[in-house]
Image (tube, rainbow, N blue to C red; front, side, top):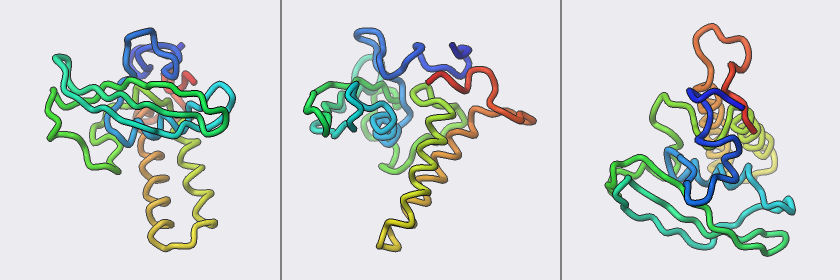
Length: 162
């Protein structure tokens, strides 16, 4: 298991303890979390409904999703920064404006996402879609690099838990 300085709040963030939300920095990070944590059948999650609200602990978001392969429905609970202020939600494409590594996705998952976005560029027809895919790949790579310290040649302890 990863050390507490870089690890998520539990060993497998895709299955948090009952009642405990997955800690994310943005709505975009929630979307990426759903991409890399498929249904048990292997199918991708398709968000159906979202309930973003203020709580005494900050911002909470519940995303009801359905598996595109088997039809299973599941609700994912996320905790976001913002000190309970819905007006302080990051812009839609912003992943994490802080230097803090993700607690929801590890370095390998961010690298997998970066690779996904780079590989799809050739298949996209629109220059705008290609540019957005490149920006998404860059953002995911930047998130992976937040796990590394100065002089690290490889993933440090705590950067991998998936």
